[in-house]
Amino acid sequence: MSQAEGFSCEKGRNLWASLWRIYRRRQPPTPFVDGETFPWSDPDFGRRMLQLHLDQTHGAASRPLNEIELQVGYLMEALHLSPGDRLLDATCGPGLYACMFARRGISVVGFDISPVSLDYASERCRGNDVAFYLADVLRPAVAANSFDASLLLYGQFAVMPRERAIEAMERLGGALKPGGRLAIELLDPEKVDRGESNWWFTDDTGLWGDAPYLHLGERHWDENLQASIERYYIVDLTTGKTDEYTLADQVYTPSEIDKMAKATGLQLEFVQKAWGGLDLSDAEEWILYVLRKPE
Image (cartoon, rainbow, N blue to C red; front, top):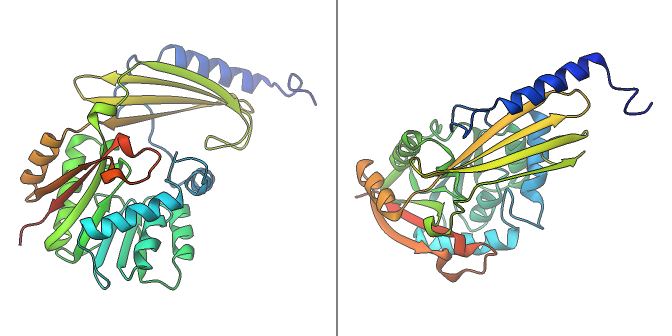
């Protein structure tokens, strides 16, 4: 059957509705209002995202393992970790960091909202002192004052509203023992792309689906919110239906992180640009913040 023969009235109506939906979209998008968050609990989406995490040719979801190894070595020193210490890995994904810390003698608890990633992490870290939980960053299933360090890496702190970010900082700080440290990795404000752009492509595999689809994307900079906002329309060419996703990436300055730390009872211990010269492909784009809980 040809593509034309497979085009039903229902598909035509869906496609027509999709095109009008895109045409009437709000411009610019309102972050955390327009569109949906990624469908982390969907098994098919989780499987495709896991493939991105594990792909060693790019850093679209996770850095390559050789770069993570360098970061873990750096963080062992920056967070003053020693074998037997306890580490909380927030948004741990497939456990790439957790496993490497565990193999250095660290007891790790990781949590994430993707069941597929957590299943993989549990299998990958089997035999090590690691426990994984399905939980949001604001609902860690951990006791207060029980960890020597906690992590929130690769910009995950920036993709939630500011009021949720400060709540996450407070919760992760609360999980620390007195003297414990929280590491947060954020984009360097001086390196952030503040331009406007749009793009499109077609495919039949990848993050957005396993059947032919059209991806339409646009990026906006919101000066008031200090956020880069990306919106994606994914048109399923087999059904004509469209999904809309919006991702807002907040930009924080060191002075803002310092103020947030003080508001949550933490102290900004040090700020390190470009990972101190580590050989990471994107090191120049990032700043590492280490916050300490007073004793």
